[in-house]
Length: 633
Ligand code: COA
Ligand code: AMP
Image (cartoon, rainbow, N blue to C red; front, top):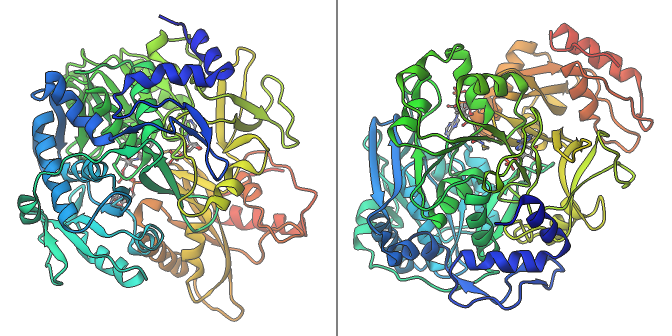
């Protein structure tokens, strides 16, 4: 058994040898003979001449190996007070029918399908059905407003939209069909059909001839067999926030993704076929794609689809109940969920009601894990609490304390060490390698390992500009941090204009565009300020048009509604402050980082390129008046 050091060194010195060894962890239709090559765009691609099918790896492979009666999926829904289990055979039967129905509707290899569904089994089934046909799914998080859905429809140009009549948020039923209708009104692209899973909590009215009731549609679908795809064919597009209001379509290919995720299940998370793995995220985020759906199923684990919240569904003991009931071995969740639990059950009293003896590892990611939350977990749970770091772009972890190689000593606040395949460096703004403990830009030397994005959907220039232009030869993660004298990595936060609100990634530009639509607003800037529960929340700094006479409180209410309508409620946008001017560089770039640090009370450096430093005093005064600023220069 190689050590972490052996594998890490091999992966950096001879990536081809390392990833060639890993390729036999999955089964191929055509085994690749060329492990790494550059495509026409110049991107490094893995397993270039391999052919496979990701749905086959997730389901059929296990059935053929005699594990068809093992449990593949447990749907645990406090939202509907129901629990259902699917064996690999049962899940496969439904996936085949949905794939068949999609094929009848004209979907074939390479076509896109948008999935806008709450956390119900149909979400998993729809994703796997697309993979079965070689169609490219694009799952859109249910919390996004119609405008955001419309942007994704126009970019992905799907043939079909698969949706449900409603989602359930605590005790609120949220009808989805009106949101889809509104998005289709806003979008220029026309879809061939909309398929709606009717839920008893709220039935949707199907009006047009191309709107189908899911159950009848699925029942009429013939069983579809798998379509072989190239390792390089896209499996999905997942839109994520960049620094502008326009989301980036992260493309994931089939081959590298299947190898990387299968490897990660034991190497990072310590699970094998038959183990129960639970990622308490949403299928709309990358964690949901990688670790609710594909990773656990590739490995033959049981995965849990949880339709609920950490609190009030029905109480702050829900997570403990799910872990105990389903005998979960490895649990993966965002720290924000535990901050919500800690607020309601500070002494963690509800834990005592449950037997957590099956639990061996707790992984956190999605945002920086603050020390109080880490200690609270460490104090109350009898398992290692492992912080690990990754992004939508990479699809799996860049740094982790890897269970499969034996855990390294933990350092609170650190992500431990880079995962094999990731040559992580800390670079100063000048591109020099930072010294131990010196802050810098966290980058990864090329080639990125299998699974990481090869491009942005139909916008390769943006891929180059966003990730590869700041430091030639290095992938820019957008995160800042450092490595200590033992090489342990610490990620402290974004260096760009991306915010992290309750584990949800948002761009300042996305919210600014919504605020700018208000008739009284001349200009605005949004910054993500620190929040004890959500990690960060957006704060709007707003300049009014001349002659506008509107009360700050009334304006704030209207802006909050605008952001909820145009982006979605999960933005947690609640505060705005009226200012007279915004600080900018001489070239006109708004100094968001300075304002963020000012609001957070952190030290900040006034950039030499600032146009008018006096504006900072005005901003500080406005933040103080609004009881936001604790800042000093
Ligand atoms: N559909 C519609 N509305 C949604 C939604 C969805 N899928 N998800 C959230 N919202 C709404 C909420 O109902 C709430 O609305 P309100 O302002 O009317 O009350 C608002 O958005 C705020 O959402 P959020 O901040 O997410 O709070 P929450 O209480 O709904 O959930 C957590 C708390 C911790 C469960 C949730 O933030 C979470 O799961 N975060 C982790 C995300 C994640 O997994 N990231 C990936 C990295 S691991
Ligand atoms: P997303 O693409 O939504 O997964 O968000 C990725 C971003 O979340 C990263 O670039 C980081 O800024 C942040 N992030 C994720 N995990 C961690 C972590 N463990 N520690 C610090 N930041 C994290």
